[in-house]
Amino acid sequence: MKALMILSPKNFRDEEYRTPALKLERAGITVHVAGPTSGPYTGMLGKVVTPDLTLDQVNVDDYSAIVVIGGSGSKDYLWSNNKLISIINEAFKKNKTIAGICMSAPVLAKAGVLKGKNATTFASGECVRLLQWNGANYIKKGVVVDGKIVTAEGPTNADEFADAIIATLSKEKEQSK
Image 1: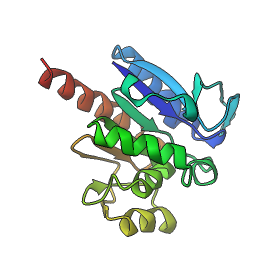
Image 2 (image 1 turned 45 degrees about the vertical axis):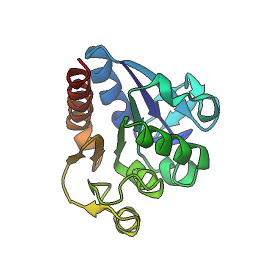
Image 3 (image 1 turned 90 degrees about the vertical axis):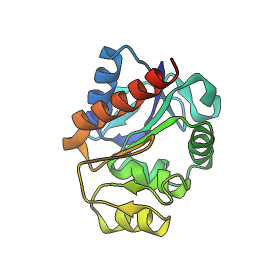
């Protein structure tokens, strides 16, 4: 199995990327990183990551999960990125696991995949409103799983977020046997 983690070029949350990436890899899931441009990318706490590919190079069929990482850069680089919205929509139509943490959950909402779903996000008024305006049932909770959609409130939930993604992928693997 492979997971695609999507970062903003600047100001992604280091721990929202680092913790899930390590846990996914330890669970035997190959992790690739993509973003709007080629790298290097810099996190809010200084972590530097060079993406494996740009969003334009993503083939959704190559991945079991699309994981969008938050941080303040999400609003500037991801929320209105049409290519990312297209990737999320395609992954949803193909019944892939889709995950968003913190300030990345609004892009899932804008893509329409949270309509009628329980979800959480960074507890700012703007993030919560974007979820609600796009049909999500906002739940103020650390991690929310609704089918194959996993959302998390913020960096303190990165560990539980990773566990929920792994559990969702494991359930999918079991069902395909």
